[in-house]
Every structure is written in C-alpha cells, then in structure tokens.
Length: 322
Image (cartoon, rainbow, N blue to C red; front, top):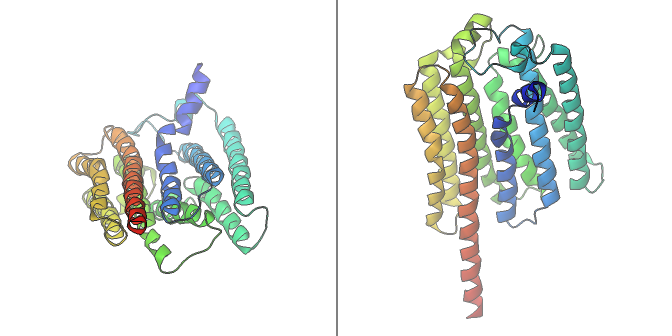
C-alpha cells in the first residue's frame, strides 16, 4: 500500500466508525425486540449511510481545522492528513464533495426502500433530516459559521448520534408509526447513546484544550475549563447509565436483564482514566476506548434483551400448551 492510500485511510479515521454504527444497531435491535418485523435491507442501508456520513465528517473536520490553523505543531492528537502534507487541500475538498454525493445517494436509497417508493410527508421529513445531517457533518469545522468553534459541537453530536440515529431507524422499521405510550420508552436508550457520543467529543476536546484555546476554537471544554470539563465528562457517562437503568427497570421480562448494565464497565473505566489524566497524547487511546466501549455496551444490551425475550416466549408457549 503506497503512502497516498495510507494517508487517505488515516484521514477517514475508521476508528471512529464504531460510534457511527452504534445508534443504528441499537435502534434496529429495539425495533426487533419490540415486535416489529425488521427489514435487514433498511438496517444495512442505514449503517452504510451512517458510515459515509462519519467519513464525510472526518474529512471535513480535517479540512476545516487545517484551513483555520487549528491543526498545527502544538496539536497533541495524531497528525492529520492535510497537516502532514500527504494530501492537498484541493484533493481533500474533492473527497468531501464525493462523500457528500455518496451520502445523499445512499440516504435516498434508504428512504426509497423504507417507504416503498412513496413520496409522502414522512419521506420529505426524513429527506430534510438527512440533508441536515450532511450539513452538520461539514459545518462542524468548515466555514466562518462552523458550530464546532462556537461551543455547539456537543449539542449536535448528541442530537444526530442519539435521537436522530436511534429513533430515526426505529421508526423506519415500522412505517413511521409511533405507538404511545410503549414506544416512548425508546427515548431513554436513544438519549443514552447521545450522551455517550457527546462524551467521545468531550474526550477529544479535553485533549486539545490548550491548542483549541490558543487557536480560537471555543469548545465547551475551553469555556468551562479543564476541571469542570472532567466533571462534565463523568456526568455525561453517569446520565447515560441512569437512562439505561430506568429503561431496563421498567421494560423487562426478568429483572436479570439488569445484567446488561455490565456493558458500562469499559465506559466507566474510560471516564475514570480521563478524570485522573492530564491532557496528553494518551487521550488518543481514550477516544478509541470510549468509541469501542459504546459499541460493546450496545452489543451486550441487545444480547441480554434478546435472550430474555427468548426465555419469555418459551415460558409463555409452555403456559398455553400445558
């Protein structure tokens, strides 16, 4: 593999993809265990769309921070593609355009399949939401109005990685029909994923606090200071745990489903390490740990819920047969 391909792979930051797919997997899994007939093609297209949007965001982030001078010799994080000179700004801009088009095509295909080719009000709503996701992926650091430079990154990450991803795919699996009050509980795990996703960004911003401050990038971490940012990080993780606990407590077949909370172990471990560690290159590993920890939590959560549902169906069948 030549150096150019290595540079592009590095710029796409595949290590961030577990975070991108966690919300889609959780939303699809919740739809499945809620009794809706899941469509694997919808799940697959949603996962692909999420991956494309994440790569688009990573490339745009590289471009935006470089053009603003934030990626410089003082940056603690891994050296980025434009910063290293391995990729030119013109080539990166072309890649951003290509991934924007790919995200749009994949998203439209997802909607076409989900709505059986019918263009109705929910279709238009999802289309506009998809456009908003594309704009958000680019505008995090690109342009004069980049919201990542105004302390709004956490809000957008929470919204698009949490409620939009989880509830969006959940609704697509059953034709945009919301059953009240049973479906309302899904808001809790959607919120949990959003909070954890904000935690990933917060880890990144704690690492870069000094360089961001000196470069004029005003993140929430820069605004509140290092000590409060670490406390904020623990609050995000704890609030996510509480949301998951409440959901499991009131939506279970057996209280043993609470064992799914063990999936938070690597997440809390990461939170402890962030709290006791000063900003350094070590945070690059913490970013990876939390991203993978979120995916691990989702997998444990869904396995426990699926096994519990299987036992419940088995006991229910025996009850009626015997």
